[in-house]
Length: 188
Image (cartoon, rainbow, N blue to C red; front, top):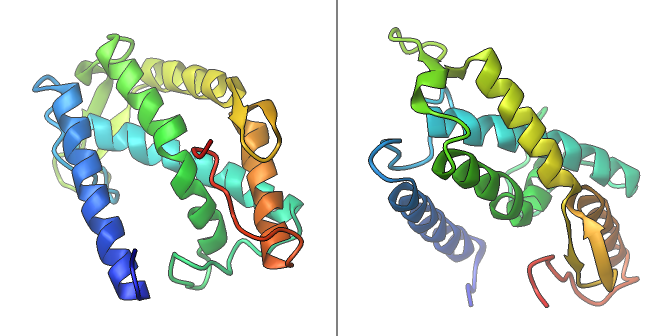
């Protein structure tokens, strides 16, 4: 158990590094993915991950606002002007379940290929999806958000999109002392 915020961030950093290294091994040499880099995404997998995380963050902002919370006031992500820190905190538990799962599936099933991307060689815009790849990604993202999974506090199966809203409300309950502790969706 981490005893300070710095220790917690160190554990999170190490776990993240290991997670993305494993993702690279799963995807194999075809995709040449070694680690996550955001701005600009240098390769197709980073382009998929970054776009998926952006979509998920927008949905988390809406869920946090629906729960009556300020998306800018987070507890794990540093607060900066214009940054939805609380929404980013909420996204952390959903990234592997939604976006990472989706990207691995699209890549390993051959639904997208490295040829469906354009990379800017000047390094300013990075790697971008072509229209067909974008269309495939958005359709798969929507299907994933509508996928039902068991929700621990709801006690029933709900879509991932609904789970995001339920988790935001659960977080609001914890913050206002209406619930004793936060239970992430992955816990049973």
